[in-house]
Length: 441
Image (cartoon, rainbow, N blue to C red):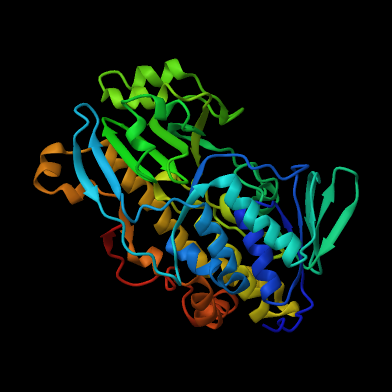
């Protein structure tokens, strides 16, 4: 495939997570000159399970003629045989066995270890596409004027670009410049304990070995204001669990630190003994406070040359299973908007990007709350009558979405809306897919 024509647009991205990497790869695909600055001094395969919807799979399959998707598939869970088994928290009975739909080769779904999947994407960007990724670079400041934008590194060095994308996470430094004030995270009222470990102790216990002897598995126990999800992956050799529960702790100082097994056991009192048996095999766990922010009034800076992307703009609850995927959609969209607007209209590109993305992101964010509430406030009489009501719902309007095609289709109207509001009333939401319907995964 021949390289795209060069646009002459220089893009600096702060943050080498999935959103930042996707923005860089897509900017490269669209002909922009791009480089990444990342605070971490070295790539480490940290974390536990992460999910990518079919709308992310559609993006991955376009990279390297499908090769990146094939690499991710080899590292991801395969539930084509096992499905998702949902248990009642106290009796342990399976109240709903949710089948896994066939994979769409053009838009596959991936669930795997965050660090391992991230390494595939990182190496593709750096080693195969040659995108400069500067590690160990602490960005102290963002700046802009009418002609350019840039960042100031801890060393005092200034880096200039046509546009800077702040993909620097929940505690984004770019956000303060964009908003003009410090926007502190708020507690969502929930926290998650999460862990990833090998099966060596699980497989020795008659109570838990079944999860490691039947290939990849996925089970969930649903209880009062609590849900516990457990997976085995790589043929049952690796184990992962997450437990979401009420938590009102102040998250001003930190939102992630080591967890304590005794705290988990207290939450699981009266639960199916299998849950405690699984947790007891855990060598270590993380206590992750779930934060949220009210919808920001804007993702674009005053001069229109700095853009917030991914968690910096819109944190998601894990129950949406869309946080990383929506960050990827952001990356695709801004790359298209920059190409279409051209070097002479960077502010128009960023404003059109927000116009295209804002309402969709808000609607997808809500699905995380809906799933959490469906599980945490379960009507068991209703479940007995309709087991599918407790299933994890897959929204077609989310998963069938093609971010690149959509951005290309609506860009002209979006640009007109943000540059000529007097001609159309500037009513938002016009780029949201019509008629969202929920269907089971």
